[in-house]
Image (cartoon, rainbow over all chains, first blue to last red; front, top):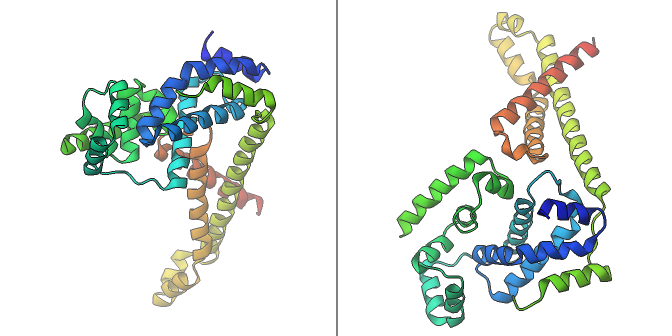
Length: 175
Length: 131
């Protein structure tokens, strides 16, 4: 059963099958939120849960002719933006990140679990502005196409390439 | 994940703590946005019409014949508020248009041309309506 077929069933009143959507996407959404917010485990888990709850609440606004995964990532994106607004989380600098990694074994462990091959690259990505970081994460880490990124971030498809190139330029400078 | 997310969410749904928002709510929101968009364009057309009427009364060609006095009259009496209001409404219309459906995929320049075109057509229409 495709995601869209499942959602159609949920929209028709069979809420039970929404669990299948959670099962399919919980790891992906968790990973995306974790990389985007760089928050602690509990916060990321709460944001992941909020994403799925918000997804369920607003499921009637989803058009089954569209791609569900992009729609769900959009919900996750909105949750992260709300989180940044509420908490006014400041973006940590590369130096702070190095200190953090040295002093925080747990984070290193998490990075190992996530099989991060290049710590420097990750730190550089984390130090990018949100709009650049998000495009990099979606394109390289979540394997999303330009079209999908356009749907998730609500920007023109042509702009995705422009932002991605600028992000790469910024990464080169940092590295 | 520490939590069994699937179970937790389904429990909340079963208990009624999490409820689906009705489809009608989203339909209403969509229609309200279209309504506001139309209202913005109509208002903009009315504001621009005021500027058009000003130029009908203060014919620039005739005013220029009066020399500096004519120029001064044009500058002093020009309906700046109506003009700025009209422009503001056009910008508002473009911003609302970008939020409708999949319009975020459409280039802003194209949306701007569409909105401006609609406002101009409405202005011409209103001009003929008032006789």
